[in-house]
Length: 135
Image 1 (tube, one colour):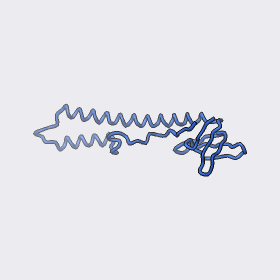
Image 2 (cartoon, rainbow, N blue to C red):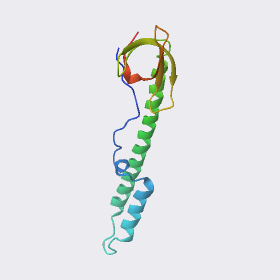
Image 3 (cartoon, rainbow, N blue to C red):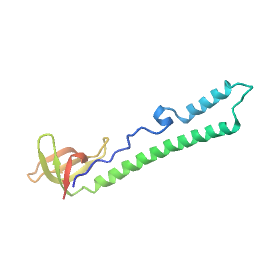
Image 4 (cartoon, rainbow, N blue to C red):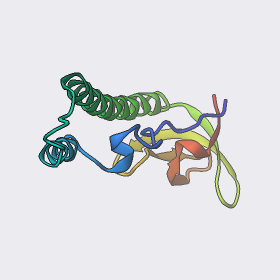
């Protein structure tokens, strides 16, 4: 069974997040718009409230994306813990190795496995993406 690593969503955030703007920047834009508007033709109240609602929705979407990223990281860790004690086939740069997952480290961006081979050697720093089969 081939497994792919689950990592934080790396797609660009929608709207302001993709532009690198935060809520403070967006409010600054609105304030600047109000400061330099034509006094004889002020911004319509409905349009102004609509813009504020859009910015609020944008900020909530960014926060939701952050929470989903956190959830995916937890899910990845949970799935990886299920590999402890299981026999796996791993493809390395030089060969294919079969062995039992003895430990898991969560220090880097993705979990790293220590695999004990049948001849007593240990394969360290194996990643979930290198696993080709779980038995």
